[in-house]
Image (tube, protein in one colour):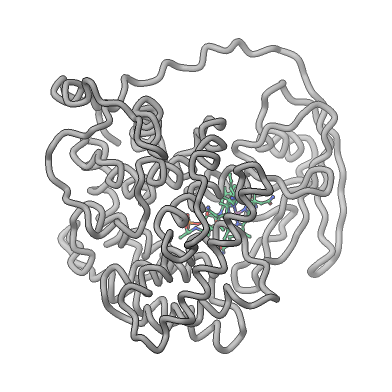
Length: 421
Ligand code: B12
């Protein structure tokens, strides 16, 4: 997609002497490593990833060639796909990414065409809200509705106040068991709206934000710093960083939460992109108020990481794999045992099972911002209209990673269960 990018000596000089002593801002070295991985992903990933552009801009790397290339691809993709083929949440992420590049999402120009992403976002948000009102669930997810609301709020237009009230009610409803990720994204959106809302709705928004953030602080205390899982930490940290007035007089022990993040070596671009803003003391709320100057970044992007030198042990492991549908149409359950090399991903297990028994274990994936998502197994396809998906479990617990990154252990039994969300 782009040639290798090296940062100038000037950048390195700009960094000289800089230290990361400020509490709850990550060490420069870690930020640089993450930026390097994001930059590499611009070259290697199949799809342009707006979360990556947003994170690089929030971390001040706007002037890098990777950002420029990514911005170029994102504009082209927006013009091609936004009107018809994107979900509301995808449009919202593109809006945030464009704002963070100091571009106007109302006039996105590429390939000789112009689109108004704010209009498209407004229209798609209305569809989400109509579904929420009629069916009690949005067209996609409350996570996406939160992104939509944040995008419209930062643009200062459209139905973000109405969307925020609906979101706040969902967040406060005891029947909803919303994930940490969804609550964190909702809090960012609601905090944005709270700053601009009519006095009549401020109380509801305040209550929702303070309930969620106080809940996060309690969860952090109980979990020794962990809020949700390691992949929800990025958004939870962003939410807590942006909302201190809502949980006062409680204080946030940010050092404890940061230490959990430091203990994990994030590799997936989207995972890094969600955590990096918090590590540089920023959140998605700041996407539309960046300076986008061409001054050098505080964080030099390091030289490309050396390829993994680890030697593959030729040892095989055994993995049991079941596919189960007790939800729709003709129910089925098939189990097989496969042998793969130590360190193989779950995707490899699925591929071996499908190669050995295609009539039972054939499957399909789609590329997404988190890697390959399994969308169909044994001819049974997930469908956003009836909110079905293939869920992966081990020992009764849902996996915290997808097939592209999860590495099963010897003897492990993985189940793919057709489920609803
Ligand atoms: C909503 C959601 C889902 C929904 C998506 C449905 C829908 N129509 O929107 C459902 C319930 C289907 C889902 C499923 C899974 N999810 Co999910 N999901 C999310 C969530 C909360 C928001 C994603 C989103 O809407 N982004 C905004 C839109 C605009 O961006 P997008 O790129 O278009 O989003 C698409 C992808 O994110 C994709 N997707 C969602 N989850 C996952 C997970 C994986 C591994 C992949 C490859 C793709 C994928 O579906 C989205 C809609 O099409 C994120 C939280 C987060 N922090 O990002 C977790 C998250 C991405 N999911 C996660 C996981 C682990 C899963 C599962 C593997 C769980 C399981 N044990 O089965 C499965 C995927 C299994 C498979 N079939 O391959 C993890 C991924 C962590 C990681 N390091 O890989 C996250 C970060 C949650 C967490 N904190 O643990 N998920």
